Length: 263
Length: 256
Image (cartoon, rainbow over all chains, first blue to last red; front, side, top):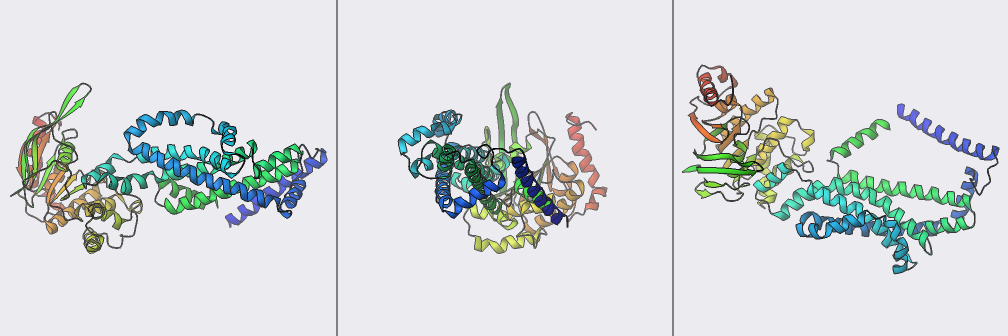
């Protein structure tokens, strides 16, 4: 019963805030090019989807984000594994990686457009670049965090280095890797949008810019709404995978318990 | 033949303020099928001794032989039980028990029945599909013991296996271990800092003192088996505990 009450309250709160927004905009006669009312945003959203414009750009941005995410995390994971397992790789490469990491990656977007052009390639590269680091860092930390007792157990069984990796280090690193994927997914979306801002032929980021030039603020609001929903859904996907893989992790169990209480 | 033969074994650790003598020319032997307890206060080098015997740590001097072969690296015919259960949370109870089988590629099919029999020997029937975090501390340690026995090792090394358990569970586990040992007849080297536990479980008790770690006494416990928990109240039990405690007191290790 408590959950039913919570759902009703949530809906009420949502509706009343939308209503308040609408009223404030109308009562104070806020111009539409400064702050549009919810009805105007809804109209823009309808117009965009009815004409097929939003679908086209949305699918383009989604494709960039997912490809960039896959590429970036695969590279981040591989290099992270190399750094964690090989002292020489760590010694010679890690300082550069750390240096590169402190650089705001989105600042590279203009360069990447110069190198890769206005097409899909440059946005995917930019998304991958931003998604790369959370994976790299978390993989390194995760693979190095195997506990001493567990290492002794494997050694006492005369396990080879390969077996220690597959049976202990890798599963042990998974909570860290999954946390990295969580961040990387959202980062990839940011990377893709920034790349579109800098220069692209399609995508929601490019759409926001062209709407901005035309003072179409309701249009921009409607795209922002789509982007936040996309971000939320992508994040949910990662969470679902995480729950399947990390059923044994204490943090995952805590999260499940917490959600069971709130829902 | 002797199962374990340790001859003039020393281990030095280099630290910032010079070297620490963890073990100083230790010699002892354990017969096949014998249950030997090593008792001593913390820091007397018990765990170092166990690490050398399990082949994880090389000795500085001297040697340890297992069935006549010097221990230079981890061996596949030793089962080790650590102070904490050290179970892998992503593996079910059965998969944890089969870890040595997977590592040593002994073939799961052939060992499935062994695993189930051992789990039932330690009183864990019906728990094979559960995960470690669903079990109590005592049950987790039983899984660890089962894992140490799965590949039918020649020798069982136990490093304060019940040290982290509460007093009542600990007594229960002592009884269980005796029962398992009477059934399996493995050679056991059992490390503990509890004098009553050592006397209750062992055929022989080796008394160790720290700095430098050495064995100062080797006591035969002649209490008939199977021993019940009440045997701790028997008149023949007290003198063993008393004399071991006396040895520590004489060395100034404990004040009682």
